Image (tube, rainbow, N blue to C red; front, side, top):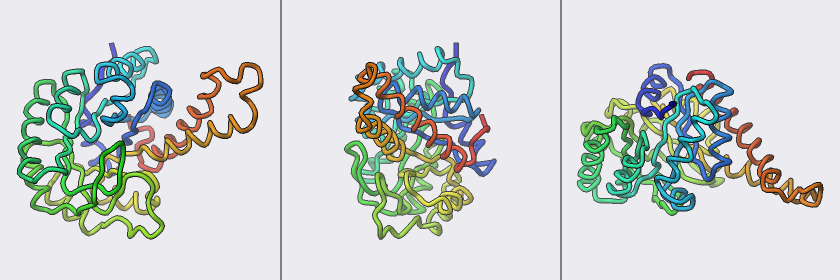
Length: 289
C-alpha cells in the first residue's frame, strides 16, 4: 500500500539541493488526479495542499484524505506525495487533519497575538509528533485573500521567526511582500533582504505563499535565499477556467454528448498538467522525486 510521506523530508532535501518543492492546492477529484499524474509522469515530489475552504467544499477532512489516498494507490503513484492542511486557522482544525491521516499541517496563527501564535504552534507540533507529521508555521502575514483567509501583509521579524523555529516546526512561512491571489500592477516585489535575514535567523526551510504570478527571476532568487516550498493555487485555477471557457464557447457542448462532465473537465485537467509541469521546471523540482 502506498502511503503519504511527511513533507519535511522532501523539503529538507530541496533546501540542500537549492530548489523548491511545489505545493499545489486542490479543489476537487479532477484537480487531484491531474496533479498526481503529472508528478508521476515527471518523477517529481509534490505536496497536495488543501485549504479549510476547499476541505468544506469537498466534504470534510476524512473525505478529502480518503479521496487523495485512494487515487494515490489506484494510480500507482510512486513519487513522494505529502497531504498538507494549508492555513489551518485553529489548533482544532490541525488536529482534525492529523486525525484524518494528513501527513503535514500548517498552523496559521498569524491572525492571533504572537504569544497565542506560539502557544498554538507548540500544541500542534506536540500533536503532530504522534504520527510523525510535519508542521509549518507562519510569522508576519501573507497579503491578500485566499479561501476566506485575509492578511494585511505584515513583514515578519527575525525575533518572531526564531521563536517559532525553536518550537520544533519543520518549515516556516513568512511575510516578505508576497500576496495571495493576483498581484497588483504596482506591486513592489519580494523583499529579498528580509527573506535572507529570516532564513538565516530561523535556520529552517522557508515557504513562499502566493506563488502564482511572481516573475521567474524573483522566484529563482527567492529559492537561492532559502525558499524550499512554493504554494500555488490561483495560476492553476486560471488555466483550468480558461480551458473550460474555451470548450464551452466553442460550441462543443452541442457535439456528440459534449455535455458529459468528463468531456467538459478534460481540457481543464490537461491545462492544469501543462501549467504544473511548467512550474515544476521553474522551481527546479522536476525529476527530483
